[in-house]
Length: 377
Ligand code: ADP
Ligand code: MG
Image 1 (cartoon, rainbow, N blue to C red):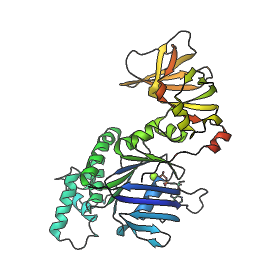
Image 2: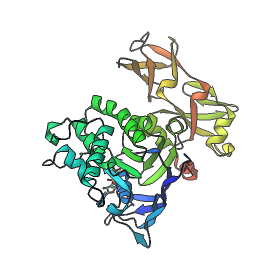
Image 3: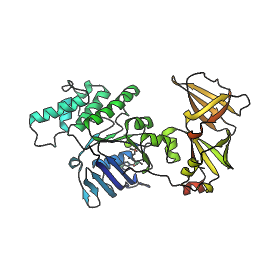
């Protein structure tokens, strides 16, 4: 099956009245049929507003939204939600408490007029089968667990076989274990249904594990769009790096071919530097090196300037809080093995290719810095 475009946003913006900056600002992106897009960003960055514009619950001020090759919102056209080929799943399930599971799911089919009663029954049972709830059709929402209720909501959204399912933080109300299990199930169900989906979350791990593509939003803007691996390994901006990986940032100064940091001098591959500065690296003598928590190598060394200030045992991993001479704190994660005790002085090194380079956080370089935003075409 050749991939076709299921959703296209072009420069979509929305500013609510009494808002200083737009909730969503010039967002453009493209999603192919069958793909799952994770929309990731901190609370208040505009995720729900963007989703509601795609669903048709909010009208953009400018921009064009196209779903399955049909323009649904543009300066001179507007289709209401029921005329868009989308299903929606909310954080709070939004089931009807007085309707059985079956009737809740059938509610999603009420716009499909020409179907016979048998057809409808068939569709409902198919949708319940898809989400693993066959046999529970006569129950009422209060007789189900939170995870089961969310699956009913998903069945209701999938029953009309929409081109696109929009899920707004669907797992946020569930406790951690259910959330982790349902993550993978959700992905499997969406893939089995053969539909495309946008999955909104503020949880990095959730976005990376569920999605084929991840779009990171910040203050209404799309900061980066890429595969989960690209977002994690090549964050396009310091914001993405901090938000997605909770990475460490270490100031560094150019010293000939090396970069001097308070951990010592580090050699960095020239290609990494050139990529970071779009070929203008000569303009930058001050940078910040991004090192992910898992990329530090710690070796006990009684003469080293770095001290282990704190240690957390997390089962599979150890988290170390390191104090460097400037007083700054760095966080390192290692596999739980030979644990180093608090107070130990350690020599800290970094695998060479694990370093990313960002302009120093001074105002002058920040304004020159344009994040590289990748939009899938
Ligand atoms: P997220 O889902 O990422 O948490 P939202 O899309 O809900 O973010 O909100 C983005 C911004 O728009 C926030 O500043 C929020 O206060 C504002 N906002 C959302 N809905 C409305 C509304 N109906 N009226 C006014 N402001 C709103
Ligand atoms: Mg929201």
